[in-house]
Length: 68
Image (tube, rainbow, N blue to C red; front, top):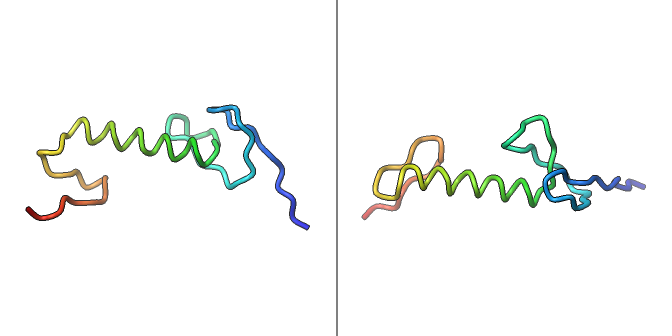
């Protein structure tokens, strides 16, 4: 029987049993998957806000605008 031991997320304080995500703010900290998704979306919104939608996307975003 494989029983997962609950961990406490240092970012939100909630218990989780899923595979942890690595924090983008501090790479040495494991956080819950929900906080990992939140940090990824925050980083994406920040990056898009810095470049704007009128300029071509940088290569690190890994996507391109649809043709006009």
